[in-house]
Length: 277
Image 1 (cartoon, rainbow, N blue to C red):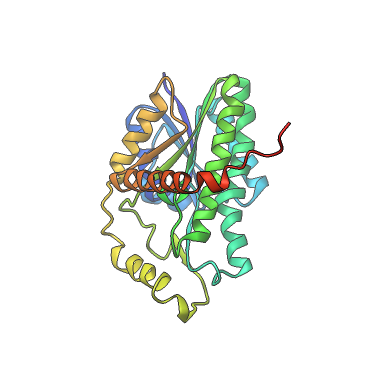
Image 2 (cartoon, rainbow, N blue to C red; image 1 turned 120 degrees about the horizontal axis):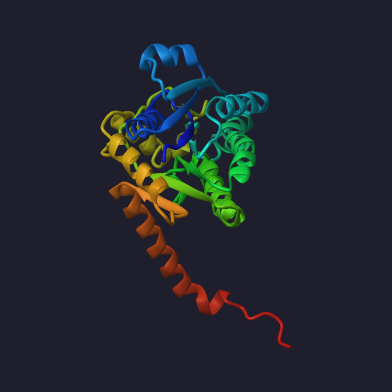
């Protein structure tokens, strides 16, 4: 059956690759982008694709874009919350306005789109919400803590959402990509904090150097990620969490092992039994 996709941040990177894969599979795509005219000029017209203007931070624009999609195609079967950006810097370096802006897009924007789409999925008693997280959504690290905080929030939202909508015939999955060769490390997708503190040169400074040196050298192929997304959507029992990429799996396994080791070390001290009675 032909499915109708609503994909945010669909003008480039992973969003664009997922949109192209869905079109190639014969599906319908509503590509939500900041500048539809520019997107059409770059990608060309397609009878099964509609570009809609969307800044996920604008709730009225979110509602209008979703309404246009349903008016044109009658339903939304798959929502891909892909819009977002990164912020590189130490926790102390992040100014309040920088952190608030990051959460406004990566978390509050995702929630706004999800709230707008879910009533249609509930009416259909079917649908699949895919929230793009990151390997940093499962395990945080120096320099990425502020960005990872938004992705940890996306993980929590998705886990709860999956339980809430399951009785309604709707699935929810959080996607955890590793490093894929997109523009994420470039200036358009990765912000840098305004203030750098010299004391963090050995930790966060090393991460800044890594980001500068690895743009365009990431190991993951975005086209392969898009094919994994299609398989997740086609699954009879989709997972709640999917790491994608060998580096993402390694990071999840390393964190699981570290947590298990700490549990074993501290169980006798910390597993208090509470009041007797």
